[in-house]
Length: 294
Image (spheres, rainbow, N blue to C red):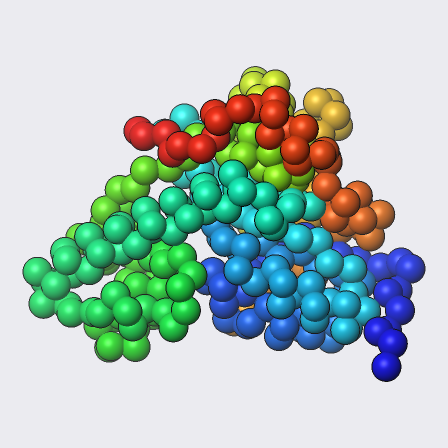
């Protein structure tokens, strides 16, 4: 049976997460939800992993949706945790895969340290029980386990009491610099887009990032009010940066896939990638292979 034809027009959600990172739906379920929401396409942008891309791509083909292979890298900018979206990447790119393997190992070591601190407080969790697969482990997985154990009534409380930067079990982590993350994405042929920067992004800071190779910024996001969106859109236009939109969907109560969303024309451009990965790899050398420490 031939795959359904992809609608020629329509909206595409450029920011969504599956169970391969910290979402509630599997990649295939996420694609089915996009179809139910009336979208014509979807980008899977799981945190620091490519594990769900093959499943999401196959489901998108079956459902007749445009698929944008993506990722959301966790990195650091001027001492603060920052996220960088990548679109149109090559999922077989060796430097990117090596970098993600290192990131997964670092996440696991951090989780072990957090569990050790919790254990000293009488809260005992098993690392192997945090998730069934080998995907990256993050604080949301620990928070969910604490809720399941009855230690906290909800994940928000778990973060406030234990896991946030002021929490009793917080462990700082080493992060890749945003500049090296941009280079890593470019080596895989992907566009690099600053995720949900919020209202405090300064023009001078954004200009520095553009000079480092940044391709765009996420303008429309559930946490961005109208004033923030207008300001970010002006900055993007002024610096000739791509302006993207996405729901940051995790499948949590109150979230809606496709709110906000982007135009299909933009999604098609992002899905195609921005450069030849091998050429980008030759240009950047080995600069993005290592994690920067701070």
